[in-house]
Length: 319
Ligand code: NAD
Image 1: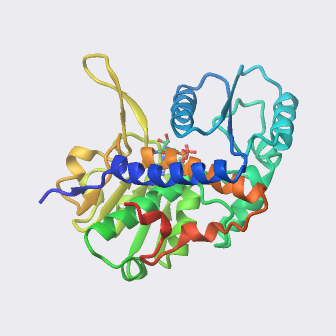
Image 2: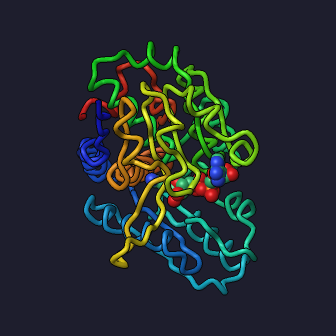
């Protein structure tokens, strides 16, 4: 039997409706919203993501301030730019795209962002709050993973809490921006969570962990890492990876970390690449920009609303 395909574009459309309504409400309440992004250098993925966010912000009527800078930029100049964005009342959300050039210390840069504008929760205060289960902002990629899972469970009539409480979630990849936040969200849902990194792959192999997963989240950045022999038949597979792959005709297309053709016929449900995690991640960032605008305007905002594990998450209502 072939897996159910979890349609990220459909989930993203539903979320977009909600964000459009939120932005309209902010405008009518005269609350300022604006998204600022900073790209340093000419990394292909970072520039492509920046263009996507620019289009999305424009579509939603969110003022957008894109800063695309040469990789010769010094760290102090970058810190000066962030200081200016922190003070700018037209900017509610700040996103510094990775990777930064080697001469810039990522941790120092992330620490310089005003935590109330840190929509990806990269500032240690926000990363700490997330790890404690009381987030200010739920980072967009991990949020997307669980939004897709929740949506799938709803679509098959399975109670979310019952499912998570008895499930093993295996997260492959342990980066600060994707793997670790996904682990925190798994804990918040009271699931059993296992983290697998490349040393497991190099030593015992990842299959001894991944084969037991009820939910397999893959964020390693390695095309085709997960094959049919790595998954169980009842697994729900969420593929976060985005890797460029050149086909025989010379065309470059994006593929995931999961070998979709061999895995999809075997498992219960799976997200495609493209069209899975990516579209929900994009709109979630705008959702967090709305939260930041409210927070800066002194409204009562509780990021824990985005952690809700039962079937009453307001973000699900539109889906
Ligand atoms: P990263 O390079 O910062 O981290 C990758 C993690 O995977 C590291 O912990 C590394 O040790 C681990 N890893 C590497 N090889 C492994 C292996 N063979 N077995 C097990 N673990 C291994 O990357 P990232 O920023 O976390 O992104 C991961 C992937 O997700 C990339 O392909 C990236 O493009 C993609 N991504 C997608 C979205 C989206 O919205 N769909 C958002 C962010 C990142």
